[in-house]
Length: 179
Image (cartoon, rainbow, N blue to C red; front, side, top):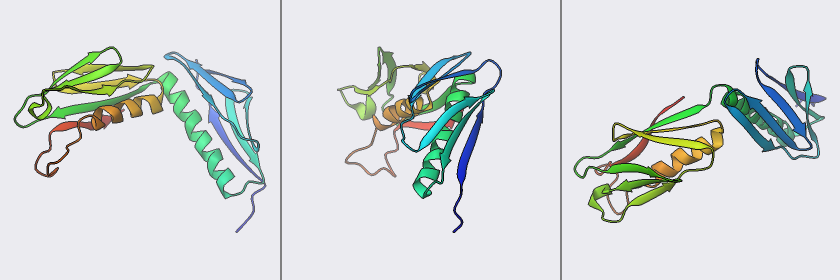
């Protein structure tokens, strides 16, 4: 296998997006807000050159090359988040007992799931907005891709089917669209 001298990834910053690097903390600010993240490694460097961020590692091994690609993906997601944002759409499906959904503070409350008397709840992370539309659609949006995805996963996981055949009892809240 050929040894590489240097791996370098470039993340272009579009118009209206700025980045600041303070030690290991990278903050990207755009029209929708700002996102910060720690990038800690002894061998990897992130620096700003012109209108771009550059992730560089010299004489990388396989895992170091992979980590440079991961950091590149994180930075691209941060730029996309502050320019466009992330939106996940979930849908509540039920066959017999109509479940009701409500947002209360940092919780999404699911009432009457399979006719249960005790409501189920899902945690909404900071910086994420959750709306219930048309009684069955849940729209999760925000600028941090990981927080939006984890909130959608929390909502989906709150209605898992237990002690029943999942092929027959398909009630629950499911992810239907990512944008």
